[in-house]
Length: 135
Length: 135
DNA sequence: CAGCATCCGGAACGATACTG
DNA sequence: CAGTATCGTTCCGGATGCTG
Image 1 (cartoon, chains in turn red, purple, brown, yellow):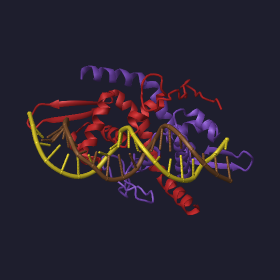
Image 2 (cartoon, rainbow over the protein chains, first blue to last red):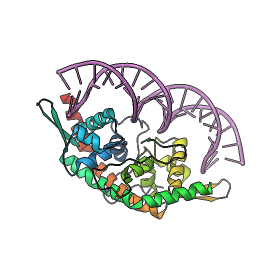
Image 3 (cartoon, rainbow over the protein chains, first blue to last red):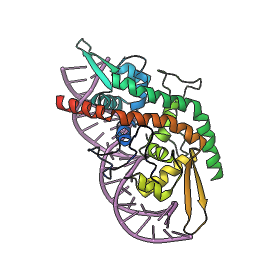
Image 4 (cartoon, helix red, strand yellow):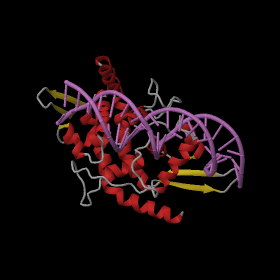
C-alpha cells in the first residue's frame, strides 16, 4: 500500500503523530485543512470571492454565523494571508475584508468543491436514505 | 463542522444568498462541508483514490488517526455513498474499502484542494509568521 | 459599526480495554 | 484483522454584555 504519490510528486505522506499541532513536518493537506476545513472559512472565502465586504455585510450574508465565529474566522484567514483587512478610521469605523491573491487562488479549488456540492447533494441525500433504510 | 444536526443526523439548512444557491434556498456547500469537512474524511478519500484499501492499511497510512475515528469516518462516508465496504468472510476477516463512483467524483475537487495545499503551504507559513511577528 | 471578554454546554476526539 | 464499548478530556462555538 505505498502508492503514495501523484503527478506533481505531492507527498501524500502523513508523518505527524502529533496531529494536534501543526509544527514542522506535517502533512500539507492536513495543515491546510486544519486551517481552512472548519465550518465557516470556506463560506467566508466563497462570499468574498466576487467582491470585498464589510463585517456586518458578511455576517448578514452568511446566515447562521455568530459574530464571534465571524471574527475568529476572519482573523484566522487574515493570519494565513488569505484575507486582507482594511480599516477606514471614520465614525463609525468601516472595515473592509477582501481576498488576497493567495485567497483568490484558494477560492478556485474551493469553488470547484462548491460546484460538486451543488451538483451532488441529491445523490448524497438518496444514498443516506438508502443506507439508513437498510440499517 | 459540527453543525446543528438533529438526532437523525439531518443537517439544518442555512441559506447563503451571497453566492449561487438553488431555488430551495438551502446552501449545498454547507451541507457537503458538514459531511466531509471534518478532520479525517478528506484524508480518507484522498488515500482511497489511487486504490482500495483494507482497514488497518488505511489506519497505517493516515498517521495520527485513531481506530475509533477511522471507523466513524468510514461509516459516515459509507452512509453518504462515497465509500463502499466489502467484507470477505475469511479468517481473519478482510474488509476492503473503496471509493464509489460518487466518491471518485468528489475526489477530483478534493485532490485539487490537496494540490493547492501542497503548493501553497510555504505561503501560508510565511504569511502566518509575518502576521505573528507584527502582532 | 466592528469588534473583544467571559462563561459554559455539548460535541468531537483520544486512550484504553474487550470481542468475533 | 476489524472492529465495538466506555470513559475522560479538550475545545468548538453560542450567548451575553461591554467598548471605542
